[in-house]
Image (cartoon, rainbow, N blue to C red; front, side, top):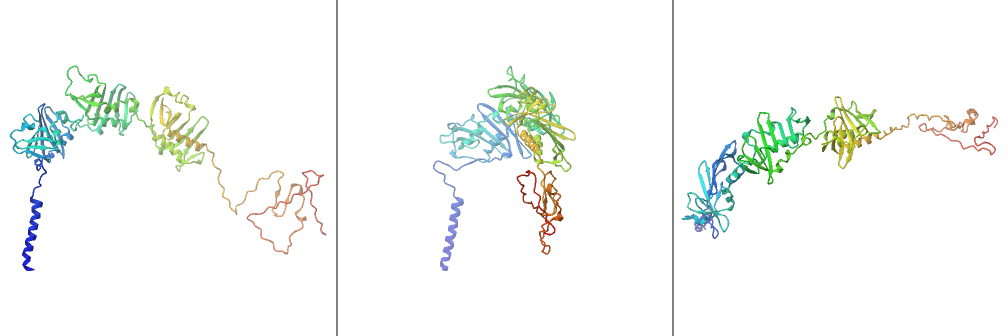
Amino acid sequence: MKRYFPTLIALVTFGILFLYTNIYEIEPIPKEGEDNPVQLSKVSTSLVKSVSWKTPSNEEIKVLAKSEKDKISFEIVKPSSYHGEESEISGILKNFEDFKSERVISKTATDSSIFGIGTNSPQLSIESASETVTFRLGNDSPVGGSYLIKVGDPAIYLVSGSVVPAFRKSVNDLRSKNLFFQEDNFSTSDVSFVKLEQASGVFEIKKVKSGDWEIVSPKKAKADSTEINSIIERMHDLRITSFVSDQILGSNTYGLDKPQGKIAFESSNGNKFEVLIGREENSQIFLKRADQPFVYGVVRADLTMFDKDFNGLRSKVLPQILSSEIKGLSIKTASESYMVQKNASNSWEIKGRIIDSVKVNDLIGAYNSTKIHSFLPWTEGKSQGIENVIDCDRFELISASETRTLVFGKTEGTYVSAALEGQNEVLKLPSHIRDSFNNLLNLLAKPPEPPKLISSPTANVPEKPKEANQPKVFASPTEVLVPELKEVKEASETPLIDPNESKPQEDVSSPAILVPEPLQASPSQSQTSIATPSIPSEGD
């Protein structure tokens, strides 16, 4: 066995070397017509300093990259100064973070023009902290992909077609589509004043101390804070569809010399911004910032939130009254009137009778949560069933400091017409508030249930009222006297029970009443006369 030991060791060693060589030292054999991929660039986006484009039909484009607090921004410096579109430029650079060829067409090409590569070919250069790489793009390959060279490398490569669009960018492709930028210091939360000028009027809205919005012109009204905040945010985030012109030249003013609308914002820090809205053309609306020369185009759908009239800007909530402060609720119809009050224990009662608080709270909650669907002029009151307010169903919410009265008109479908007392306009409200009113009205109109008595075997039973011609019940359970026999004495009765016999125990809990057999009257007597029983003599 010992003489085979060296041979065994040699075989094991050979096997290990064979496996290592095949796994780690042998390069993969490419398929027919393919080469091993070549690393053309490996550039980290965070280290990029600039990107440049050259095309035969466009001027040179150069973009500078700036890194600030883990965020990269881009600025176009050629052919003019613009903000760069971060998502667009970052997406281009990702193609070159690990850029490899698919095939080597020629390792030492002497004439690259046959592949469509020359000095006028689309060129892209990426400058990083460590190097600058430049690529030129050639024609598309018949088998897919495109030909490309790396400046300084004599080889011609075939690369994936996915990288081709990165070479064919115009300056407008690279420009930012935002209307406002970080350096504008336009914070939506800091806006304290908004002014809208449009065909329906001029509206001035300011933020009050509570953070809500109030319309101050043309007349005062509580504004719809959600609507106003939406206008500010959507203008702040507005995306440009097209870059029309860098300035207004000649007679073509795009309708901005006499704007169809203006939107102005003023921040609490004093910053002011104004946007002018011009005419509509080819499904886009022209606009520009008042402080910049650039003319932009946006789709009309992005500006629909500004097409608001006074009622579109005002609050859609009924004048609020805190539920906890409401002490009384009055309901009135043409024929009924009820007053519900909250007692010391916070229960609701009517004339001292406690009622179900659920339906009362439902009506109060419906009032405070109902959103106004639309506003109609008071001249529509007659057609909406509110011509004579006195005859309309209504309810009042009463607190220590104020009273809110809501009057109902006609119900049509899912909406009911209504009016607030003291305001000359008709409101269209969801009909569920009328349903809550009807539910409470039905509860109050329902007569109270009689009190339930609990019987007790030892309780004193109240004596029934005496009525004329009714038999009188005496204490003795063995005798009933009718009015005509009152002269019969109890002493004249002969005992029917032997005194020596044991007397049965009487049931005192439920005394029996014995009704005598009806007395037979003679035919000659009147139907109302009763025969007198004979009284036995002492000798019997």
